[in-house]
Image (cartoon, rainbow, N blue to C red; front, top):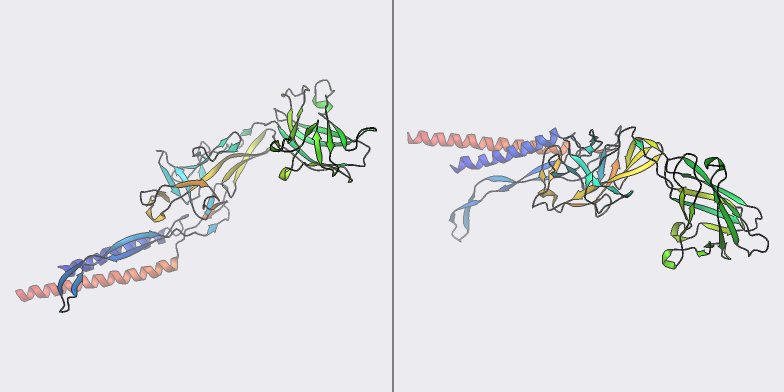
Length: 426
């Protein structure tokens, strides 16, 4: 009898709604959990006749679950007492993870830990994927690889200094030499103070023509007598640097040279290889960073790459997902966390442990760096909480309960009617 079938469809649909609400409430403290809502739709209709005006007389066959939609809205953050291994996505996107079988998944749960290899993994053991470092820089065109960190206390090999720059003003009225010092590292990680001495124009020399002499400390070279590297630089009437060793200062595109070389031939006491430096002459915007004006000679800033040996102490993650390992001697970028997004989030297949799989309905994942292409940024040392609204869930629970009770009452009522009908026959 349809009278029994119709309320049974309601009981089935209400049971699904109650299960969905129960799942939401049980996961209200699950990291990055996304609440769901059960949506109903009516079943087909049976035509049992027509009215005198030709209108159809139809009787419905009950209800069904039309969908279980997921609320992918942002959850709040918990930043208290979290480690750098924890991270949250601020905006759109999912972390890309790969399980031990090589299957790719996606998750908002940023509660990662390190396995025995130093790889960041989820609670289920899936590896966090990102862009690798190639040639000292993150390569966003390379295939994704697991984000792996050094072991605590691991030694970082030294990197010799290759590039230096110095923001300097030379007093145009000065008659005495001006020494400036910049520290650099050799191939063994030993620090050396390179002294560059600027000497103003001598008598009979055109104004604005200075000489420089760069040398290592006497105690750092075998024999104690360092060999200086000398050169000449000229300045324009407005005080800007014009030439170094007869070569115009400027960008390569403009026909100039943005740097000059300082290649020391001294044999170092510690046995390290030769120190060969590229002295960058241009600052921000391509403007020469050495001037000669009527102000006191001074060095307002120096930069030099390279580092000595050090031990690993921890790591940090930038808003763009860049993972930076921290050593006692400096820092080193080890990768960049990748994020993914899909065209139709409702089409994702929900898995255990907060992971999702793409389907034909969701579309393929579009992967990129955090903060680009509509993807959100990454907040370090934080976790995204679930977006379950307990007040709304309790309201939905009451509605689902009332629906279940009404359908149950309909079944018992129709059972009584059926029994009365049977009694009439007998």
